Length: 316
Image 1: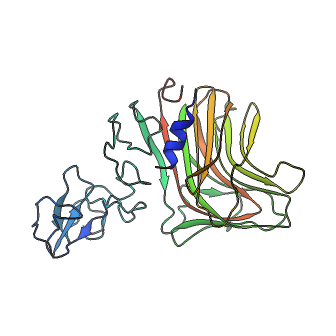
Image 2 (image 1 turned 180 degrees about the horizontal axis):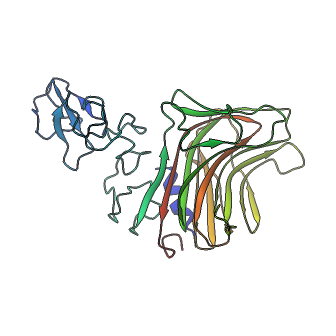
Image 3 (image 1 turned 120 degrees about the vertical axis):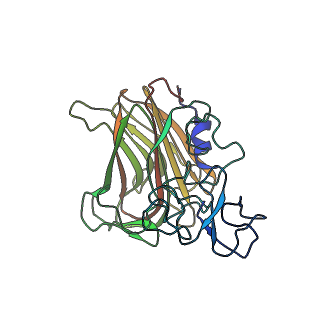
């Protein structure tokens, strides 16, 4: 059984720092408070034992000098989504700073990114903080030009009567998978009767049928109002949102975790749960993700997908 506490825990829950005139020389240990690197040195927070590195060196050969590289020994490192000093490419949890006991199960995925922090075997399959330009080698929109990256956020603006739009990417198909997403809703188009912000996962292989859609729906018809909605290849369930699901002042996070024949979905806004629901789906490996919206203007801060290859993994 998928545990709602794990899903909620997913949601609430080292950029190299240039020398600041400290006393620590090259090769000396460093931190962000008392052991500061001397001028000309940068602290490598991505290391198990942070040490001061030469500002101008580039040990990983990626063209980014240590002074700007948040992953000095791994290709990439230009961006650090959670501002913990560790670049997105080498961060074991790129959406949150390390906790006191960061990786209890030793699988290199830290809490709160780890769907089950007591069971080893999880792996970050995809993280995108939407910095720079939209990665068109990874993401494929259904309509060109609707999805853009602006100021470190993925933005989609969907006019009144346009149909639902999708931005898709593929990951390694995995039988146990979690999808987390952070977003804001800037505007709801009043001329449309249905509004959607959600994330989907599918098995897109020729014989695959499994899939789910976890998110929020606002209907301007009838009495349903705003709901947290979870649709799978087997059925659909929804729960009335306990707080507004399309408020422009709130920062929302959603998470879904599929394992075996069960999937759970939770959405929170400013650390207050909207709803947590579960549903059944056909057991299979899911490998295609779609960010999707309808009749809204939405801004996404990041998306994170974590997978586990063992079919008896956490959540059961």
